[in-house]
Image 1 (cartoon, rainbow, N blue to C red):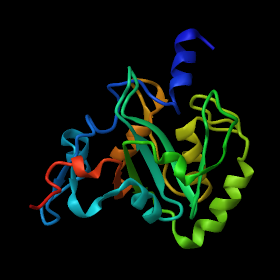
Image 2 (image 1 turned 45 degrees about the horizontal axis):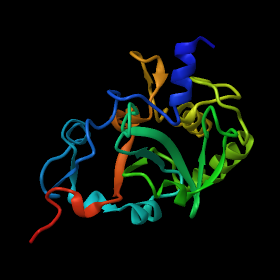
Image 3 (image 1 turned 45 degrees about the vertical axis):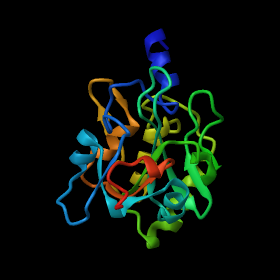
Image 4 (image 1 turned 30 degrees about the vertical axis):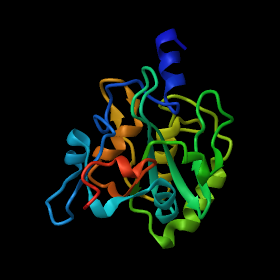
Length: 213
C-alpha cells in the first residue's frame, strides 16, 4: 500500500481527517419542533429539532435495532468530527468493523460509544422482519479483516455497514466520497434514504437554545 493510502487507511475508522462530509461543527443549536427543518440545517449550521436531542446514553438506549450510528467528537488534532460508523444489533450490542489496527468485524458493547461527544442515530430502512437476516449477515462477516474501500470479504467501517445493508436489499448507508476516494462516515448524514431519529449529546446542557428558562 502506498504511504499516502496507508495513512488514510489508518485514519478511517479511527476514521477521517478534518474538512470532510458531515456537520461543520458540533456546537449544536436546538430548534423549535414546529420550525421547518432538513438535514442540510444540521450539516451547515448544527441545527437540530429539540425533540430529537437526548443525553447520549439515552439516545443509545432509544436507538432501534438495526439502526446505524454515526459517532462524532471534537478533534484533538487533525481528525474530522464524524470518525466512525457502527450499527445497533442488540439491546446492548453494536456490530462494526474495528479498523486497520483492530481485530476485524466484531460485536462491541453499546457503552463503547459513551466517550463520544455526539452521536447521530439513523433509521436506514431496517425493519423488525429483517432483523434475523441482519443477524445472519453479521455472523457471516464476523472477523472480516480491514480493507479501505473493501467490499468483498474485507471492509472498512463504512463499507461493512453497506455490506449489511445490501444483504437486506437496502440502499448503502455511506456513499463513496469522490474527492477522497473513500467512504467517509460523515457522508451518511447527507444520504436521503437515511433519517435522523435521535441525536445523543454527551454535554446536553451546552446545546444552544435547549434551555427554556
